[in-house]
Amino acid sequence: MSILERDIAPEPAIERHSATDDDIVFESFGRCCNQDGFFSDFYDRFMGSSKAIRAKFSHTDIKRQRYLLRDGILQLILYARGMPDNRLQALGHSHSRTGHNVPPEWYDLWVNALIETLSEHDPYFDARMEAAWRRVIRPGLALMKSAY
Image (tube, helix red, strand yellow):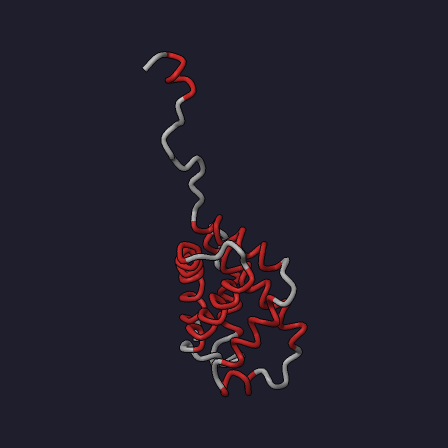
C-alpha cells in the first residue's frame, strides 16, 4: 500500500465515544421529557397494570403526580451517576408502609410501564437502551424498596 492509499484508506470501525449506561439513560430521558404525553402515557400504563394501583391513584392529582414522577426518575438517574442517596432514601420512606404503602412488588409493574412508555416515546429506544435503563434504575429502586 502506498503512502497515499494509507492516508485515505478508511479507518477500522471503532466507537469514538463509549457512552456509559447512565449517559444513555440521561439522554433518553431528556428526549422523552420533550415528548407530549410521555408522563400521562406512563400513568395510563401503570394504573392499567393493576386494579389495586388504579385504586391507589383514584384521589390523586395526576397533573402534580406527573411532576413528581419526572423528579423521581431523575433522582434514580442521578443516583446512578453518583449523587448521594438522601433524596432516594426520603422517596423510599414516603412510599413505605408508613407512608403511601407502595408494596415492593409494584416496583416491577412500575418498571415495566416505564420501559413500555420509553419504547413508545424515545425514537432511539432499542434492546441495548432497555438494558441500560434497567441497569441504571435497579440500584435506586432497590434502595427505595428496602425502606418498605
